[in-house]
Image (cartoon, rainbow, N blue to C red; front, side, top):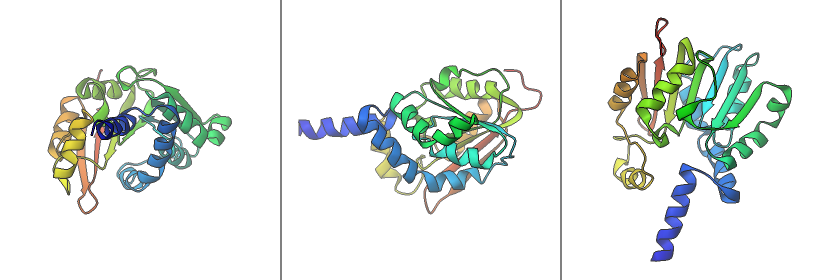
Length: 219
């Protein structure tokens, strides 16, 4: 019994912050598992070819690869608090990094190493529920967005989705923020975002929240 609990805690901990060889394996697995929901979520925001984009919690780097292809004349930055994820993401995007169009760093969403008003779009795929302080971290993302820029949150896990009863214990074990669709809307608005929209693909249990930094906002 004790061994089983230890295994569960190890795996859930790796989902929150991948580490070592197991973390790299999980990061690569997430590249495949999250591809469909990522494509669906990115379809809810305009991505121009010249955009400068940040992917927060970049994991294994598959989203960065997609963004670099879409923003074909722009730049993409990635950040993750896991060294294992950063290593995997850099491997996944080696060609983009070599060309100078992608840069991936280790760091925290709570203290983004970028100047105010740097990005046209910030993406967060399957990560925001792990952020240390969601309210403050949403404001930190707002800071690095250009006026009129947009944050896109994409996830397969939210309160009220299909089979919700199965997800609640796992989210509690992960110490994750588990919000309804309406709570996502409220959190973004409270952090200073405007034109907040929340989308749901109910049959698959996917959600996407999009918020805009107002043109006149001061963070």
